[in-house]
Image (cartoon, rainbow, N blue to C red; front, side, top):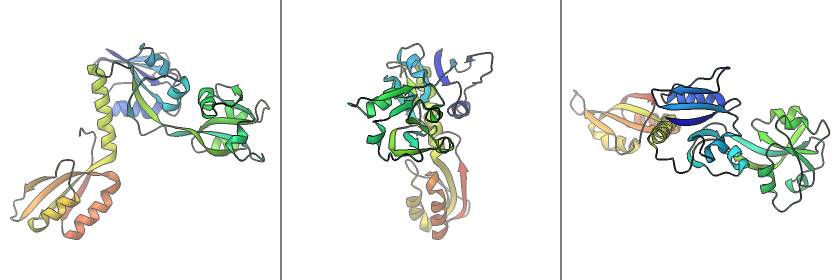
Length: 280
């Protein structure tokens, strides 16, 4: 049975449970337990602080887990990155009071900075003598309370910083998203490979759709160029002579344009359907 670490709260919690549930895993969290066993899939899930997950995976206590790339970078550890995920996007940005004359990151580096990511901040400003105030949370309030002159914190929409009277300075120090990691050397374990394959299949499903349409023989070649599929489209003759049924996977972001193009050249009965999961 493999042991998998999951975020116990925060922005990564719900999307992670939704992802694994959609991949066929039975995973749930209740207040009285920090773990959940899925015997059907031979997996035990552990709910941990996102910032602690890299430690458990890197030390081999747990086999794999999902957490933010910023938490891995902050711990300066190197678990094996298996899959970049499509959620949990965030930026680690510097911010100062709205009326501050500071306009550059170089100026920020000379201030007293409050942050929960001292390693990333130190690496970004490598070679500079920084004055850091290390906090576990609620970093944005530190300036108002007088213990810092600037902050470096995770920014999503920026509304939290704005409410605290702060404004972002310069480019992000680090950009992050959720990712699936494994303990180095355990990537080929059967249950690890299965979980990775299911997650990758779900990500494919997020990017692709299935298009089906009826096509006259005279334009079949042109239609197949519009919908080449992964290897090639599936083509089957219809009962009506000179007509074919065509099916192909297409990228979701191109779906409406492809429907327009197929209709323009004379295809009929064009249908789009979602894909639950896929292996390509």
